[in-house]
Image 1 (cartoon, rainbow, N blue to C red):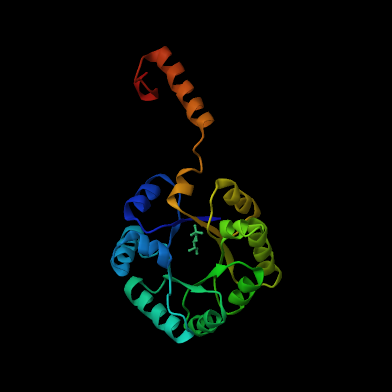
Image 2: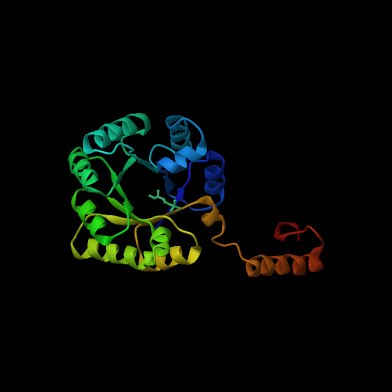
Length: 225
Ligand code: E4P
């Protein structure tokens, strides 16, 4: 399962890249709005940092298929042909996906709450389908189970698409999907920083260090003895 950052703050992206094995960045219009900066300024900065080959997912904003296709062309022009264009999984979106997939554009179907949306998006040519795990949970359904159903539907129908699970609020949701082997998960910096935040881990490491220092001296490590 790929691990992707769902954010547009370059400092946080850099910090996560320094410490974690991540595979790219996803954004949406709300995330861009939170940056408070011009969209393409932020996105170009992210692209320059993660590199030309890394996955960057950028969403169209137009409401109709023709406008979505125009948004997609501008996104690719500004950010490179391998950028994944995120398209909402509604009828106008499916129409745009069919048009753009014929051009070979990488597509991520987004705003997915039901397996049927994902099925139709994959048939329309999307490479990824992004179910919103936590938002689905908040509606009283099971977001992880819906993502698993989508994964199975893709496999059983030989569809060339993967789940890109989104909207996480905790690491258990992410772990359940890693165990199932879905294609990717994208999470906010807060969720990523909390993945291994655990008093037991910190305490175990501190005991190792203090025991060793008792043996060889404070501040000394394996290179000093
Ligand atoms: C993914 O495509 C969405 O843009 C995003 O992950 C939604 O996350 P949220 O529910 O935390 O806003």
